[in-house]
Length: 308
Image (cartoon, rainbow, N blue to C red):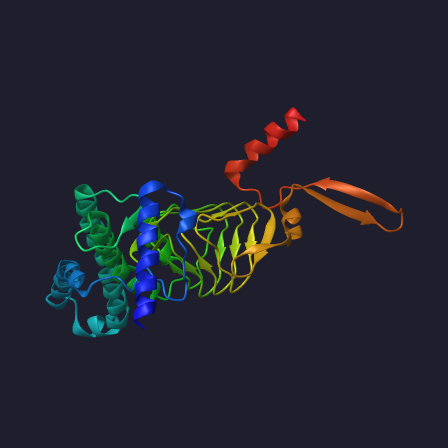
């Protein structure tokens, strides 16, 4: 047992020496079974929930008091009570979102979030501020993601700074709330974990994850920090990407770690030309249609046709 501990200390020492000499990310081996960006969050940071819940509760209590003392007949109050309770729960969640954002603005003015590889030592500025940012965002995202409306979490992620629109879907996937960029019509499968930050041994890794248009991630996948999905890229279910992995556009990947499987032939369906076969005349017919082309990209097609 003592020999194993000495061997682990030797490996950590070698990593420290390598980190001083070079910034090559390949020296950091990620164990997805034991590594997590969540398990290193200290309980002492739960104190940030107090002002968030306190002020959100004050907003709801003020409106509730105004409702109870109003001159509306009690029978009307009773009839609208279920709807009012639903509204107040919605109001409490969005109040939490609002005050969380205010607190984050204050925290970020003190120390701006940045990408990189940092030590997880107590007192390390980047590590400590990452932990408090994680706690502030986590409670609000938990409340919103348990709300029955499926699109409401997009509002929270955008509010926290993630570049994402309503054409993309997370489908009950875990997603970090910073350093992630979504393109158009990105689909994340159920149970997937999108981790732009990850604790590996004594290191915190924070790298931007980018999804280009029409990317698709299968269920139960794990996306490592720094991963870049090309346009029309598909990652099969229960697959894992590696640190800073680049997934080429128009390909299907699968496996642990993710490897190329085959070209994504279904991406052909998104082109602006549909090919039909006339069986009677034995000839191919090409017809131009606007197939799944976003409004902000139609001018690019016009320029391409003129250049051709």
